[in-house]
Each structure stands twice: as C-alpha cells, then as structure tokens.
Picture 1 (tube, one colour):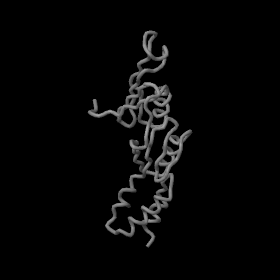
Picture 2 (cartoon, helix red, strand yellow; picture 1 turned 30 degrees about the horizontal axis):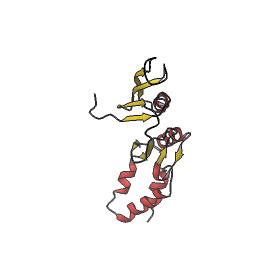
Picture 3 (cartoon, one colour; picture 1 turned 180 degrees about the vertical axis):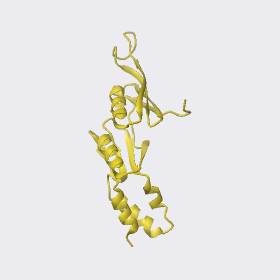
Length: 157
C-alpha cells in the first residue's frame, strides 16, 4: 500500500468520476466500492466511498455532500511522451469541463489536471536562457500544449 493516497471528496458523483477516470487511463482498475445502506446517512444503494487505481496510483473517492469543492490549488500532473498522448488525455478529461492556459484543464467534476509533454521540462531548463524563454513564451499562449510548436520555439533563434 502506498504511503500517501489522494482522497477526492465529491458531493454525489464519486462513482461517475471513478468510472470516468478509469475509462480514460489504460492502466487503471476499480478496487473497491462501499455503498450506503438503509441505516446510513446517504441514499440507500449509492456509493459512499470507492477506491480505484490509475497508472499505479491509488485514489479514494467519497460522496460526502456539498460542503467542499475542488480548487486548482491542487491538480494532477499527467506526463505525456507523445502529442497523441497529450491529445488523448486533453480531449477526454476536458469533456464537459473547461480548458485553461498552459496545459491546465478542469474536468466536469471540478478536478484540475495538467496535461504536459515530458519534453517540456528539458526545453525549459536549457542552459541557453533565450531558448527556454522562447519556450515559456510559446507555452503561455497555449491551452493544450503542442510539442511541435514548443520545439519550434526552442529551435528558433
């Protein structure tokens, strides 16, 4: 068992969110679902809590009511090797949500994600400050990150 597990508090959409996330990521599975019973505070038969795994990372989801909502102050960073991978996660996770600047999006549940090509860190950390500055400027103009355009900014002198 991992030492730290993200715990996601939903009003009443934990099961829908869990199914949504596990359908998007290939290496995922649902581990356990606990449902409210007749004597419990939630509607009988609905999900109280669920555990699932995405890419080896365990998550816990709870239908805890409307007291808390998600904030972009915490997001999930998805490192992508190819543009096809960036496109896949961007399109699927943004469905019904909102796209934001610099590879950030908010999904239909209000959870924030960063869909980032793995090469971005290398491009931004180049010893040539001009190259990294051009990459940063290009990134700041994007919503979904485009590897080709980031590399073009890096190579352009």
